Length: 108
Image 1 (cartoon, rainbow, N blue to C red):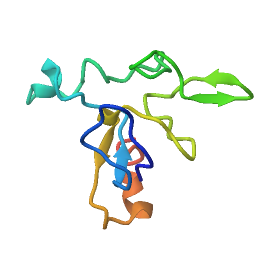
Image 2 (cartoon, rainbow, N blue to C red):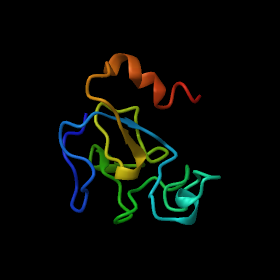
Image 3 (spheres, helix red, strand yellow):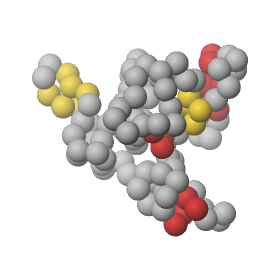
């Protein structure tokens, strides 16, 4: 459930129900506009990135030291910070304890 959104995010709002997706879509690159691929140029899986695209910094710390983001979603934490293109908005009536498997678990 979206807790807050950053500057410039217009397609999501607090309270929206979403599923994190590690193969995000910016919606603007050639791959996102293609009917044949969803390997976004901007948000494709990059296990070495570890930071937010906007400023190249992590949003997570432990004992004051930065911790890298994992695959753009960092879903092993209770709260996370993701690019808006790395979530899929879902019906708020869908039971989260059931649909959560559709995010990463089902694909895996």
